[in-house]
Length: 413
Image 1 (cartoon, rainbow, N blue to C red):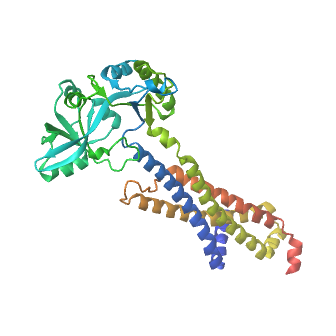
Image 2 (image 1 turned 90 degrees about the horizontal axis):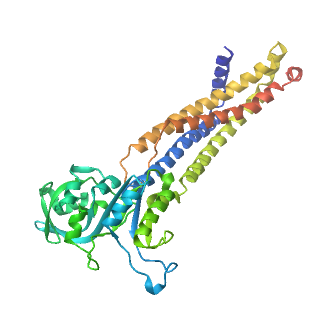
Image 3 (image 1 turned 90 degrees about the vertical axis):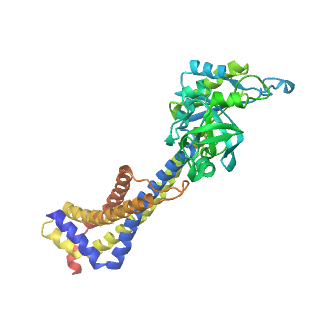
């Protein structure tokens, strides 16, 4: 019953001072909603950046051959390097950390279909590249091991190539000509969109063919070897970035006759390394602090309101103490009133923050526009902060109420 009376008294207090109550509740509502919105938006930024960086391949590393560095050989002897099938197979056999390893090479070539033509980035790939890049197929199939073994003239094309080159009258099993050679379209990739990490043209603008077919039809002029332009791998975990890179570089450097420390001879790039440089956790922390500060300001408003209430109700407090009420009952009364007011504002703010996050998260926005991503933990966090503010705002008024002297208040009357 005492708790129910405290709630009623809190509601009477809000009705008695409508303007002040409105401003105080606004601070609590906006502060709680801000915590949910800003932390959810920070999570949306993280997911958006990870998605944009990993569209070309999640946890992927790219390895290319360069030149022997001047630090390891005289400048006049800085020979150019390249990878072959033997290097790729050796890496597959000896490397323990990479989950999947595949080779690819690329070149800009003209492609034509009926009366339409455009320049396309053609990539010769192995089936493993399909798994590493992880781009879903909109239709058809990907490049298979049989395609590579039999040097088939088949192609998997990106979404932009499909729309621009094939148009409405072309699709699976259409025959296109790449640099004058016929290729059958066996698969179409889903639209990938904007990529923050790219190693050439966008995937939507590419055409993928079997690696062996590419090597036979477009060999490199400086060697009779079947050259692999780049080796891709997927690391088992982002936490193993450095370890995986060191293992891959050591194996390939030995194959090329270079030093394992020569980063110019064996170049490695990963979007994971780039993403680590972006202070996402720090940014989310700053957003949380800013939102929590707004909630604290609302708590100060509650504190001011309750201190005024203690002053205005000194006679009531004195009468209750004079007729036998215990001081801890007075403390509990004002403490519960404060928690009721902060609870009303916090719950209303949580509803506003959740509704706004759901609404913004449901909007159809471009790839690089972050939207709030709400989860249960964020709501619990906001309500937890609101509860701490309520507890802090209730301590001082309750303490002040308990210190009221019954004799002095009755003499004032």
